[in-house]
Image (cartoon, rainbow, N blue to C red; front, side, top):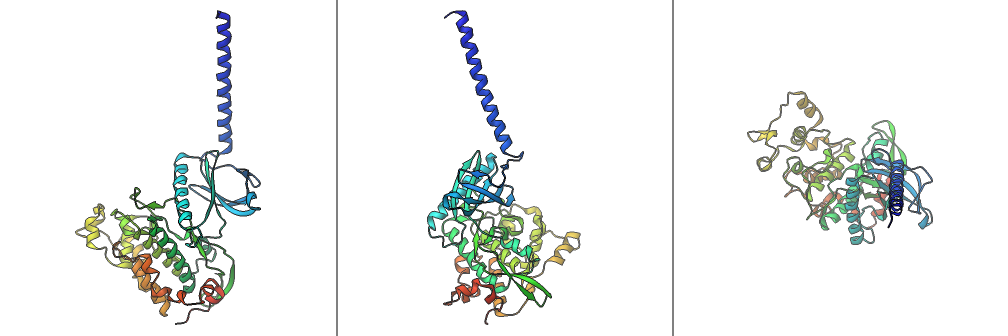
Length: 393
């Protein structure tokens, strides 16, 4: 081969390389134009993903990405919720783990009887993991907030609590711990409401018409055999064994449910803090001293002095805790039997020792839920008009 032919071949090779580089650059530019700086997908109403899901509007946003409402053209335009994960590796991997959990839930509950959100589909859209769910309504927190944090009636709490305990008990039976239970992760199927006059507050309040709920967000759900992170749960719903880094299992979910039910009852967060030692001081104000076994086993000895919580009640933080927290039974707003039954259940859910904390299978047989098991009562508990009249003693 002559020198001229070699030069010509080399120039052709360079042209080919330049073309490939140019194409890669255009694709990279396309990705950068498709995503925001922090990895969110850029979209607008009317965009169609996966040749099927037409975006209608945005429902919410989180650190993981966004949730949008879509019309599913493969299902006759049915409305669905689509969780669009950020185009970042750590969120992509977390989404794959969530999909794995949701697939196992779907396999073990094919008739969707256990109050967990139903995953319909999933796909990868230019690096964004997308998970398709049944479309639900407001979270129990958002409804509480829209209702000026007026508490839910006890008989509504009963129906919601029974479904939550049932859903999480199902997870535990299948060797899963949710690890992030909170009012934001419990959604109403339908959040339509009626206005009811509250004589005590002298104002109208929203009363949910149907208390049917679904448990959502399995992004942090952990199988028994998997690695257990040292810190889990949103702060306000974090169990003492997690705060003290004693290891955790299914009982940490039970503690979280106790905090959630208290919030439904009072309209405010049980543990409003962002500090571990303050959190423990609040627990002691509400539930009494932390057990010696837990103190001695904890690696967090800096919180204790001579076997007791090292806490100054006269400090600014000490005065805050004293003003905010009181023994559990002091929060009773009525001495009706159903209120005492609820607080007995809360007391058992908020037991310090994970090994003696009530299990959800036992909780579901608690007297607080007895009325739900009576024949012909199921429809009554879903309907707030019946609920607003209260329960018989």
